[in-house]
Length: 217
Image 1 (tube, rainbow, N blue to C red):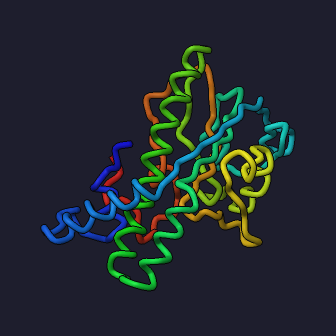
Image 2: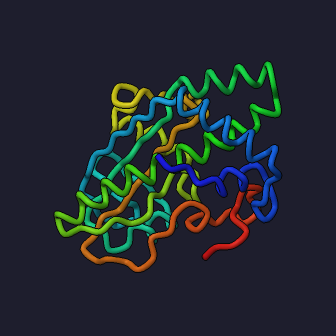
Image 3: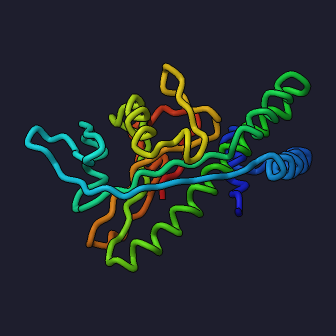
């Protein structure tokens, strides 16, 4: 997969995304280590969707109230529930360097965050191609924790995907995922192709996030 280096620098808080040579070298080394440690896996399932009288979104496997998610899914007739992970090997690598070399661990964290996003983008593009064969167009993925889409919905989403069995993702009591470099998301599918297909920072209302992109194009 192609990992966006600018995303790594953004996670590292490098203003203007202009790292020095030493940082570039360290990022390259970290990416090589991550590529050896990572075992990416993903899984998805499609479900019909409808809007209930109380405004909740019904995916048949569970329902949820979220105005932000509802906007994202406007005009959709089904949803794809999606989960992906880099695997436990990445967590082991991060823990090892947290004990041995904190500066490298920080860069590894940033590189791993960019890597899971790149992997999700790659798999979502495959889903987009398959959906188009059925005359459907996909919306940007929308994850629990975005806007008013409660992170507690991780539980229902993971249950619907049998995530522990299919990709090895488990949840803590506070709905954090293990392995940590994992993503769950809802992806809408509708008959209308939208000109905008932004995701991530562009879909989230948390304006004060430390890692928010400085410019939303």
